[in-house]
Length: 348
Image (cartoon, rainbow, N blue to C red; front, side, top):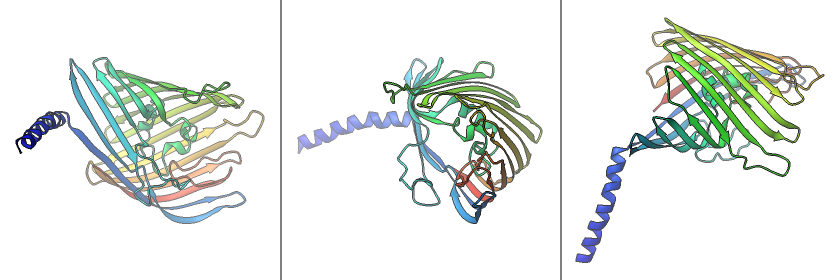
């Protein structure tokens, strides 16, 4: 019996420091549930998509993150963030395949006075710097990836990535990132690199970012993207603008621009956003040209809960297939998606 009591006491002594460390360096559970009810259609083309109603998830997520003080101004940190669909079984809306765990920003790193470095799966610098200019937050049918970011091709969360984030000096900060070339073959050396510099000063935010995809395929050895934009707040009005240019082997340079305005009146917000993309097709052929208009109303019940109503219309020429920002329709070139959405967001 004495041996059993001693064993229990030793076990308790071993567990107690771990519990104390956990208390001193807490782990935080967080996330959001965001769902919209939508009425959508796509006109034009040989087979127009008739109007249908749908309930769609808007990037609902669950995450856990934490830090540990290592002393001497050094900290370890981690994050595990997983997506889930609040509207249906946890499967991809396109493939029907079950979504794996921790598909969103997830990694481990060190942080000090010199900045932060992490390894894992994380948003590339161009995405981090430019999406904050989108009042829809890179989600909903009005989200900016329907037209901007080369239709989301340069709005990436890279796997097998190493990133460095600088401290902020006088409002200026920068990020650099590079993926491992794990898919290297005798003829291809695929990798992704990117960097951004941002400046935040009171009501003004500015960003420039660059991203390159190398050896995407045997027929596309390189594609480059540049992004320049910012936002300015004066009184109840916030203005945003973004210009992007994409250069690809054997294609014309694609240019895309976005402008938006958000008018805040207490808990109420009126939002309008315009986007346009031009060119980017194969040289010598008809070039894509599209535009998108979105108008919305947002009511913030609190800092954590909000209601959204939104109308979006996308216009494509015969060579373009711009789409909704999320939960896109399966359209052909020249078809024009449009939709009305209402939804609820709750963060915790």
